[in-house]
Image (cartoon, helix red, strand yellow):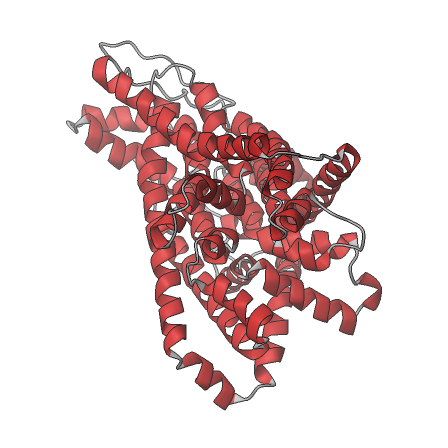
Length: 533
């Protein structure tokens, strides 16, 4: 195996770089295939449902005018939301990671907290305060506000860990500050931004709460209406398969955008930390106003609206025992789902970061399919699977945790892949030459350096699982209620004041992993730069 040769300006592997197209270890391929098979369980259910309907029925569904409208609406929603999140998220990440704006760590925490706000809670809060707020652009607004942290957090971390020497070399070659940043620093951060954009796109594609409340006929709302209204299971299954196809296209597009080249650092302490850019005068004021406006729109409006609803209610009977039980249930089941997701994601994330082959691409793509399915489809598929294959698992805590792992597996895979890709494989190879086995070498080198990123992926799964509603309604054991289901049961009977405490508790509990995630992203501070540098 050849020694890694790195370009001094871009940090890209040269012509003699480590061969990434070599075959991945058989054990990792087997474990990755198991993960892909787990993620495919809902898809197998859909294929069975569609296969039994016949080709004429499938064509009839595909050629409906409403199907074309649904596809167009869903694609437009994904493109607009993802584009706006990138436009907002990348400059915001730069502000909180590479400038001298005051209270940087506090801003990062505030920017991460919208991850704790479920889309259906945010949508309801906006509607409660602004009843006229509805339609496509209303859904775009809410989804952008709750999804932008997926871009901000990893991109800010990438900006902090980027090697400032590359930008300095570019400046010494006569490039302007902006061109040097775009040519040297931005390529180092782009893989993290692209991974976040993929999560935003998949989240938008599979979201149900916001599009349902704003009455936008995206895939999820049409599928749910088919199941609950017309009981058109075949039509809903065909539309869900289209969702899977769109998710696969998103994964392929993100892979091409990410690029085939790898950039890594040998360890966290081998390069100087990033320097800060001084902001003064009007630019400093505008930056603070920008961050303040984002915080108010993403956090202030939902929380203020919920508090207003609760205080306006004439009588709010809060059962403290029910509230605490629901909170403990939410945390416990979501934690189980996060642990299972991390275990399943490890082999896929490792081989996706280290090897480039057709089999690896296939495993990675298939592992992302579950997140493109709405929770109601995953719930129904697991009800069908457990009743038909393993009746003992029907409506158990494990099945619910399994559903969370399938739905949010891409979050953990993306974090594992990105954190592993930043660690040079030469460290593992060196450990192997010292007599350590493959697993021991990985644990002593790559695992230690990538552990914060892997843990961040687990926190993302935990955070999102707490907010999942449709799958929880269908799969939870009898008598088990989470904060999301308690809130939903009260909103169904228009007891909005009584639902508000559960929504506030859900946001408060979900804020803990969001805070931990933001802390993980701000572990290192950039070195202060003098104004005349």
